[in-house]
Image (tube, rainbow, N blue to C red; front, side, top):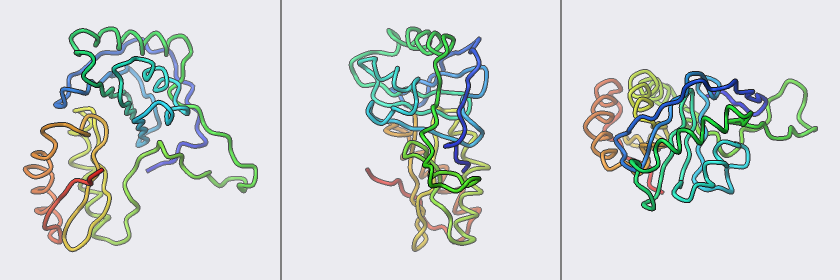
Length: 213
């Protein structure tokens, strides 16, 4: 996954942003008409104090019902608590994001670069950047390849992401992000779709499980 620590996104004005429902009743996907982050980059914030590097996420946490923000490619997934119903707030959140961005708000601000880091060497990725665990062998490379090629498009369409965490004794452990996190149907999806696909395409895989918090 690419690092974005030395990339400052000067987001152009968003001329269109619309809301999409997700399988998770607590999450709504807000889609922009252009890229918000570099290809492959993902950000997730589960509390306001962690969102200092993302002005738009920080702004969203000012809303009393927001409990999580996930950003990748051209959309922002907002997770809410039970203090509000989407029917009552979805258009307000859409306009809230659109107005903030059109008035010069940014998705991401790069952190200060350590002066001791040699020229041309990227700084370590901040905690907010989420990605697959670095593979250590050919089997893990194949698992990640299957996830990126066959699972990622469908999951992103639902406002989330499934990330590889580990492979041991035939068991693949995956981490759920965005709308997938806390989704009532996520366990069924892992077992009925992702697990069966990985078993079929990577013979060494015997089971898939979700990383527990």
